[in-house]
Length: 200
Image (cartoon, rainbow, N blue to C red; front, top):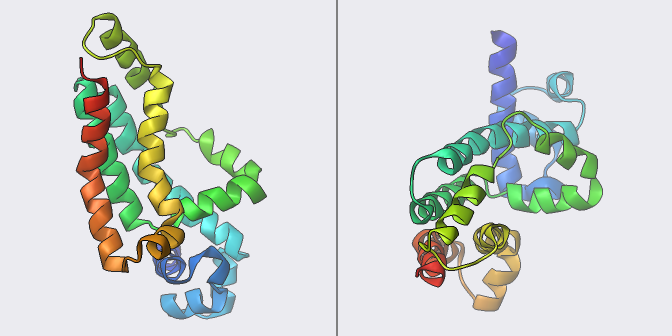
């Protein structure tokens, strides 16, 4: 139990440091200080920063994937699923702002890790949602669109602002608080734009 508590304490400390400094700027000593343990103990649980970040990521990923799968497999309409997906995803990233940049970095530098988490037992499974879109197109309930293109639109519009946060803040000259307000607005804005584009 003590080991589990210490490990979770380290993960919580790492999240705070990664949020402040990002993956590249974070230092193991700073994480140890945040967790109120010495660096030797930190290395006992996690040999290096990469392994620690992967543990933080897998913990967060294991929280998000089941939420998304519940939405994809529910009896809700396509429109309601779009609204719930968008809202849940943006809420998740607002709580874990370090993740999008990390994923892009890992896609380029460590593709094996990306493959590892994508074969995780709880990975997102959008197939029920894609099949539902096909069915509703056949029934004439929504406009004809490739289901995977619709899903890509939903993912891209949700993900991009977080991946390009630094650039967007500079281009639009917005503060951190203004950026958060814009992301809150997008929880509704993106959903309604996509829904309106496929309404019959």
